[in-house]
Image (cartoon, rainbow, N blue to C red; front, side):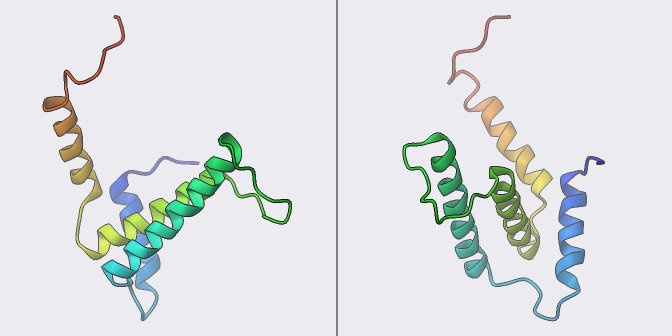
Amino acid sequence: MSRKTMKELQAEVDTYIGQFKEGYFSPLAMLARLTEELGELAREVNHQYGEKPKKSTETEKAIEEEMGDMLFVLICLANSLNIDLEEAHDMVMNKFNTRDKDRWTRNEE
């Protein structure tokens, strides 16, 4: 499987959504969906690593699938707001590498 850049992921999602008349949901609806997907991810992590296993009647989903669902909705939200996620990532990494550069204990070299 080939690796994709974030720009490619955003373009792939945009092409997918673009084939439907409805287009992107509103930002508030997508935020609600993102929250819903986060809850599903939390449920899987809690089931596999936490103190609250699922009931026998609940289906098990992979954490990867739940993260993929979150990523898809986040990309939809970014696309609908014309946000380049690579640029957003660079902004955050710059913040971490400047403002927070001495916040954590570094590994010994």
